[in-house]
Amino acid sequence: MPEVLTAPLVVEFPFTRSLGPVQSAFLTGLRERVVLGVKTTDGRTLVPPVEYDPVTAEEIRDLVEVAPTGTVTTWAWNHEPRRGQPLTTPFAWVLVRLDGADTALLHALDAPGPDAVRTGMRVRVRWAAERTGAITDIACFEPYDGEPERPGGHSGAFADPLTGIVAPARLDYTYSPGRAQSDYIHALSDRRTVGERCPSCRKVYVPPRGACPTCGVATAEQVEVGPRGTVTTFCIVNIKAKNLDIEVPYVYAHIALDGADLALHARIGGIPYDQVRMGLRVEPVWTEGARYPDHYRPTGEPDADYDTFKELL
Image (cartoon, rainbow, N blue to C red; front, side, top):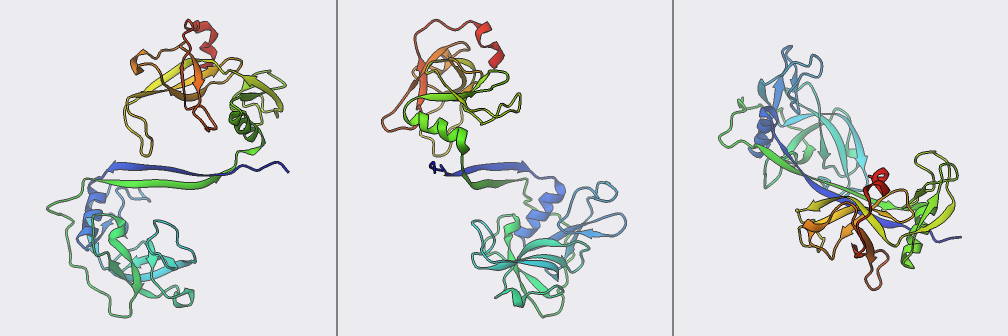
């Protein structure tokens, strides 16, 4: 059996968004231990609040406070909490209709086990010790057997309302490249670049996909390309990436390797960033023990004519 390649990969970035008046009031309220909903023209109270009625599409701004106690409408047990979830021990995901609300809020319920959870059970908000204006200001829900708490009638107006939030987004997954890209990766470890030729259109694709993206037919014929190539398009990077030890500004470019019919992307080095240009002829630079080129540098050849790479833009 050939070796099956796998690698853990993480895609992560902070997502910054501004808040409208409704979401600003809702999140600011959580910071102040107040749960706000929004009332529709027909009298329904929606929690979490939205800016437009999901039934009529009318804009709604009438904020109303609801109680921090409520009733579980449905639930599912989470046996293995993952990174970033509300609790580190097994818990229940629950939909809770807070007292005074007509819709349910999704959050975690801290319970000793699934036998302790049921539809219809009464729960109460457990507030986080430190609150910043996020849904995590509700640490979780907890079982509650007392009387329904009364909301304070807050208007939704705050002296220091939130205007924006930063929500980190992260995706962890394991990547397995498959037969075609495994061959490509193994060739790179020998400092060779290989693509695959389509038996129909005869184009050579690098990196290979195992099928022609134009014709949709399987590819198997290996073709070695490069190592030199031509810059087709490029961009200047001015924002330093986390965990990437490269000083800005630097250039990332699409490079059409000689013999390839698809451009791959790589960093350009060995030349000032403001001298990189379309048509620049480049070659790979390898570092000791690396499985792929560190960057590409100018070869010193005359620039390629535009007509030779215009179809690869």
